Length: 114
Image (cartoon, rainbow, N blue to C red; front, side, top):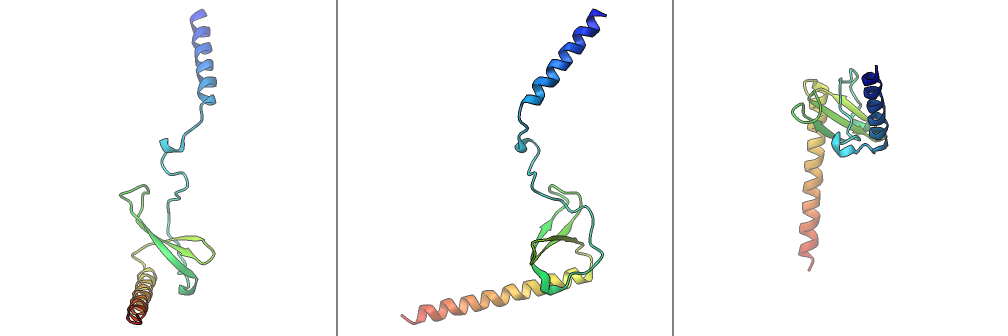
């Protein structure tokens, strides 16, 4: 009986001591990183999308996903297999290329005025 009481006391003391130490986020990875666990069933209107990120199943999360960021900073998980997702990504890519071309033209024009 004495052995059981000492084991209980040691366990209780260890539990109290462990609860006093702060938990470090570095030990658990990035806590602010939210993973997609399922895809939206509803296509987003292109006008509400301001950007996107790619989630790979080979990294932190379990599924591959495109995470659209809306103008309200809401994150919406979508599957690259869906046609509306591929269309939205193509439109975003086209928009980026157009912005890059316009930026290059402005740089060329600004540089030639010297």
